[in-house]
Length: 578
Image 1 (spheres, rainbow, N blue to C red):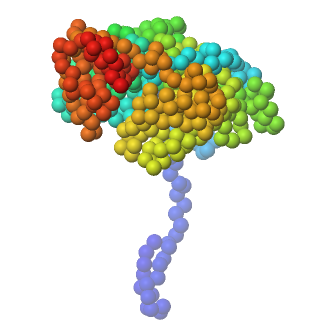
Image 2 (image 1 turned 30 degrees about the horizontal axis):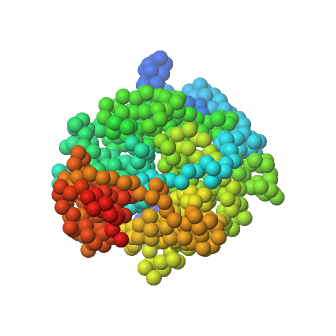
């Protein structure tokens, strides 16, 4: 091939020249690496290495009922096949030849993947709710209950007056007061509500501020956790002589999820929950998750692994100790009740006709009953109206569940009623807590200002949500509520007042120390009695004008609730103030 100048044509002409008769060069087949046994060893080694790295990072349960297990095996088979093709040299001619070659190298992984796909398909079919609706609706045994007879009137020292957001604000503020911790640690977002020594509290651990702070402090672990009293709003920082070394804030082998997976490779777990026992030892409650319908359906919990957050010691308990409060999460209980409400008359009835079909309302709250925490949520029909036909209480340790048929307003309507009562102040209501007041199902909620501080309390009757009472304290709120119930003929006059046994606790003794503080412009006096280590009683100068006249050494008697004095008098006079 060449360019030549042609004078006749006045330009350069391209001459292709004679076509070559040489045959095309054949591609040489790539050579396989080593012997067949050596190639298999290399393939298995690479596959194992990739599998170990993936397992360490993703932590799949080695369980046929875990969906992530199938993805893990598919990944291993794919890695092995790629390695087998590479080490064998891509031998073969044309598309058909290459396909035959690949099929020979990947025969065993191919059949393994095929078997797993068939297993997953059959397992999914046997778990299909269309075929197993009856099994799904039996996941949560529900018994009907009598509200007035079974739900006791709760005392003031058991009513949680803080929601999670308010508790979080208090926790963040408390950490900010600790100069030795605030620069290195943050408050974790757990805020688990538990019963601790007969009190409703929220507990949460600390976490490292960032990766550098983790490197600087990991040898000693997390130094403390917070306990927020839901009644008194007191925040306690519990310092640990030996820090928590096994938490969700850790990395590598001390990370809680990795620590669990290496010790229980086949177990599936619900989200770990931070709790403390009655001695204050921090634990992680890791509920064991099971699939009870077919291969993948019917999620339920059975027992829990308790992990000591300090030492990492762990043990599985099918029957957990009584101090444990969270084995069944609120979301799991609500999901199981929704199955019960949807499918108790069959799957097709949940779509066509919908006879007797019910579902839970949006939102839930917790109630401390005895030594356990019960989750509360409303129950409504699927019609989407703004009323409840009843409500649900479920024990988060035992899953004992009771349904109470009480028709009335749903929670958000009650919240709107409470906010409307103080609309000039523009307070917002927290999600309600269900209480028994004078044998009446009653929504109780706190009213917060724009900064998130609790300013007032409200009670709304479930059946007649136009009956709304508010008060600056819980006792005042209840007194106003009982009076409204009496005026509307719901209860008799004899039950319209809060009795002393219900409202207050009486304490008498000699004053050992008095301290004062100004909070939000109000003067408060804190009293410590002889023989006590803490200031157990708080007196507001606004409620008790003579409080500034109290002196150390005087023997006094106080009626108080929730640590706040309702009235007091000097015992020598034996006369209550007006």
